[in-house]
Length: 438
Ligand code: ATP
Image (cartoon, rainbow, N blue to C red; front, top):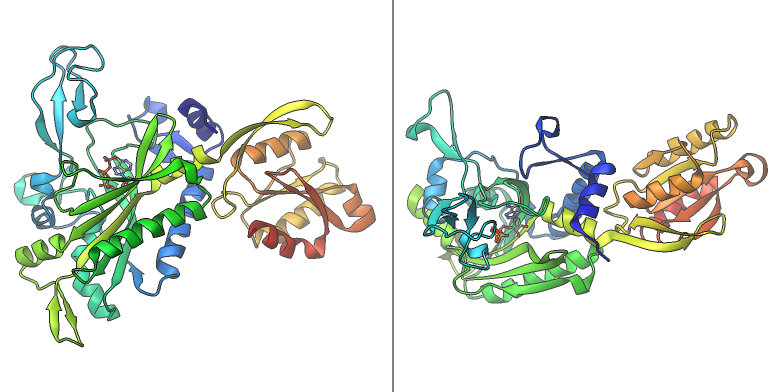
C-alpha cells in the first residue's frame, strides 16, 4: 500500500535511512547519504544477493575491480562513442531534458520550444595525476561490467571454471544523467550488482530466459509483492549498443512502472572488442572438443539504490489497530523481510526501573551476539513498539517484573501480527532464530 514519495522520503530521513548529501550546505542535488539504518538495509540487500547468486551457486565467483580503469577500456567498449542520451534544451528557460523521456515536444516547465537533440555522453571525466589534459584523462566507470570483462582471462586462469560460468561484482557506478529524480531512483552516483554469465554461443537465448526467472525469484524471496513486478522487453530502438535483447524487471513505483534491473544478452561483443583492442586473446578453450570459443554473455544488472527504494515502498504499511488500552488507533510499519530488516530484535524493559534495567541489559548482551539488536528504554512501551514497527524490526523482546520474580521469561512480540509469546530466557535464542527464519 503506498502512499506518496513524500511519505517515504520523510520516513527515510526521520528514522536515519537516507539523508540529503551535504545538507548543511543546502544539499547537492540528487546525491544521498545512507544513515545508520540505511547502511544496514543496503548491506543486507547486497548480502542477500551475494548469498543467492555467488555463495549458493557453484559456477559463479565474485570480483571487486577498480572504479578507475585505463581510458582504452571505454574506447573499446563503445562507451566513449555510444554511451549517450539525447539532450534537448528549452530556448526560453534553458532547462535541459532527456528527449526520450519527454511526453510532448515542448518544455515541460514553461512550454517553450526545444533545441534539436544533441548526443550527450554520460561518463564523468576525471584526470589521473597532477596534470590535466588528454593524456591523463579517464572516466569514472559508468557500469561495473567492464572490470569483469577485462579480467575474464585472469579469472578463468585462476579458477579453471568451465562454461557456463559467471563473474559477479557489486560496486559504485557514475553517470552524468541529464535528468535525475524520484529520490534515490535516479542519481549520478549509485551502486550496481552485476553478473556477467558466460555461455556457449547458441545457448544464449535459453540462458537469457533462465536469468529473467532467477532474478524474479530473488525479488519474491526478499519479500517484494508479485503483483508489483513485471518484465518488459526492450524495443529495437531502446537497445544499448552492445545488446541483442534486453528484458527489464520493473516495479510499480508511486509514479508508475520503473526499471530496477536490466537483463541483457550482450553477445560476445565485449570480449571481442577487448581482444581486438588489447591484442590479448579473450576466449574459452574447450578441452573436450579442442576448440576455442568466444562466449556469449548474459548480464543481469541491478541497481542497489533502486532495490532499496523498492524494498522501502513495498514494505510501507499503515493500518488501524486497537491499542493496549483498547483504543482504536493506527500505526505505520515496514513489513521488511527479516533478512533485510536493519534491526532484527529490540530489547525493551517495561520501564527504567532499577531492578529491571540490569536484567534487560543482561538479555540484550546475550541476544546481540546472535542478532543485530537495539536496546531501548525511553518513553512508554507502546511508543517503543511503534518506533520499532516503523523501522521494520521483526521482533521485540520485553523484560518485565515477572521476568525477575516469577518465570525467568520474556515476552516476544511479532511486528506484523502483534501476537505475543512468553518464553524462558534459556530458550530465547533458539526461539528468535526460529521466528526470524519463518
Ligand atoms: P534507465 O533506463 O533507468 O536509465 P538503464 O537501462 O540505463 O536505466 P542499466 O544500464 O541497465 O540502466 O543499469 C542497470 C541498473 O543500474 C538499472 O536497472 C538500475 O537499477 C541501475 N541504474 C542505472 N542508472 C541508474 C541511476 N542513474 N541511478 C540509480 N540506479 C541506476
